[in-house]
Length: 153
Image 1 (cartoon, helix red, strand yellow):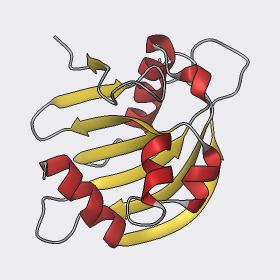
Image 2: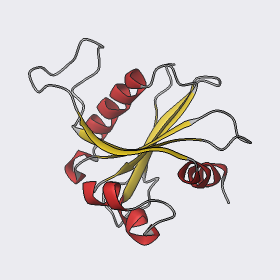
Image 3: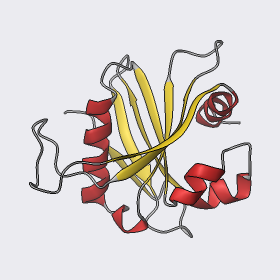
């Protein structure tokens, strides 16, 4: 089993918060005060930390509408998440395309529905400088169809 998959399962089993909250930036301008482009609105669900035997990492499950799985919106979403969770040394967002799946499924509960809705990941590790977002353009494509390295070069 891959390291990320193990961490996701560990995170799901050590759930800290189970609430769905809507986030997004005001639609007034194309860039907010943090310098990020306008991110798509998203809903946030489960928030969990990695199991004690793993390095400290925060996992957040979010959903965005399917039409936002394009490079411009995914880069803007990554920027918004980077800023929102700026104090976390390691952070992973599991990105779903269905708010209902966000509310009612998880990697260990109604797994098939969860996996159908799972369309990408955003990950940053400030201890190593790693930062990327990967996603699929449609549900039928592999989850890592598009991978964008977001490190500053």
